[in-house]
Length: 150
Image (cartoon, rainbow, N blue to C red; front, side):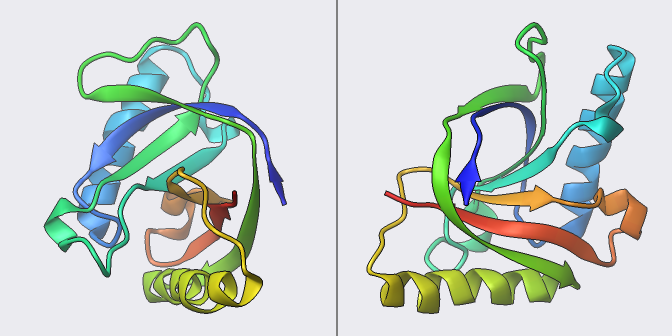
């Protein structure tokens, strides 16, 4: 698939599998955006995995949760901005509990990439949310797991 370039306003959380940490980062981010008049429910939500959870201690895994925002919105405090370039990527859509998301990542990294002969680009792995997590009570996920390719 082709991923378009995007500008993400993000909050860093303590890890991709700690739902309480994700919920806290999401709440802070959505409150900050709402306070600036941004209708975040209409913006794409993306999660960025900078480290592989099998090779990095879980307490050191960097995970950023962010909304696509316009150029004029500057981050403050604990928030930052990532400029993600357009990229060709492999994606798998995953609907279900958080453990199913881990299975999707395992498939992409352990099976699809080695068989494809392709290599991941020097970009974070990305989760594109098709449904906002609070709409699913943080109990189920509707995301595409995406790896940019060289």
